[in-house]
Length: 203
Image (cartoon, rainbow, N blue to C red):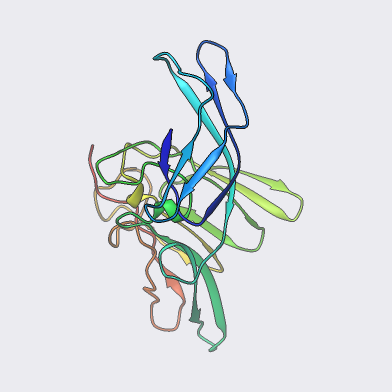
């Protein structure tokens, strides 16, 4: 089983099959040149539904792609940091293992675990928030079918704007579309406000 993955450390991989059996602790083989990872199945699997579970970690990078850290100045000139995504066109693989080509589409169920004093944004509206110690878990509505490069999320000391200015995924409540599901440094003069796009694919 081959996926796209780059600079990700997969700690544990397993597959649950619809026939009730499970394949645990799958061997993982990395190909840094082609930015792929292969999960070795111990036996041939007959055609059926399956659920792949991965436990992994990665590094918040400074490369302006994948899931990365950037900074800006607030109205008082203080340096602030934001963790945000730039997945176009094939950089989602720097954030999570996936089939990271624009021709492949899926729905996404995104949850973010953040410090309670920070704002967490994603493509869809938040549907549930729970406290876990000093952290807050924010769960978002399921996205429509879309490519990995349109997935977006951001965490920081942010103010955000929600608008229906364009026809996007969720007609009732959308983050303003900027471009290609990227969080931009579109800071309004002296305010430190940012807008997060969701995408404009209709399928």
